[in-house]
Length: 296
Image 1 (tube, rainbow, N blue to C red):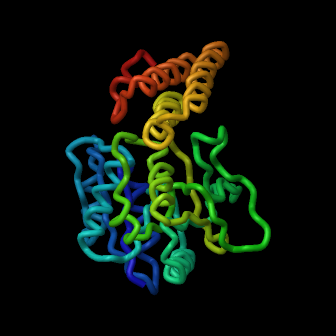
Image 2: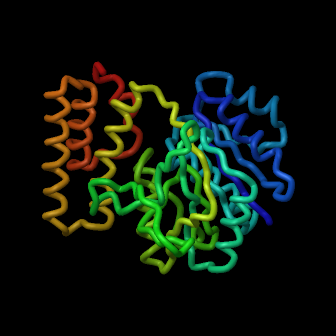
């Protein structure tokens, strides 16, 4: 099985090295791996290059986020050939047999645009998600219950933590919208893929683990900001004239900011407020420095 793998790195060389090490131990698949460094401020590039010189390193001059970083890797993969592309977080792990399972599923039905495994928490083994729902038509987008029966579960969207992507779909539909920067860009691409006739699925016969290790400050500010703001970008792209849905998310986002403020979570409240403002007025792309520089 031919396989291309794209892994992002941002100041986390050890996670990335361990992720590559896991795949280096595979016996059947010999994947071509691209590591995309999003302008790390440490010595990540040197560490990765020294440990795994065969890995193809792409070094971005600026932090392009998940969307831009993944696009640079997928562009390189598409230029190389037509093998399936595995998007894999550097803090996620997936076994060779699981990847083979996903690859066989894609080969059996090329109408799948995305196929992801079950995602479990690395330390506890608890189920994290069985795919995702449309984030602008559902408050809770993660699917948390295992289905009965069919090993293939069609879903509205998938997680970008570990997902096999059909290269034919990318050539037809296009890559991730880099205005998202981080969060919801995969869901938006799933919506575009669906309009072009490609489906998203979870193969419950395969699984991957994910270890969430981001700092609390990032989760209370940047995560909140991008999750809230990027719903408005999906609204602009796919529900432009759905006024009730737009007004709902304006009200919800402002209510969230107020609730967080009442709970004493001032950084999160400010992030939610700025996300609401930017979403309504169309300020998208990378806002890391601005958000983190707001006295949070």
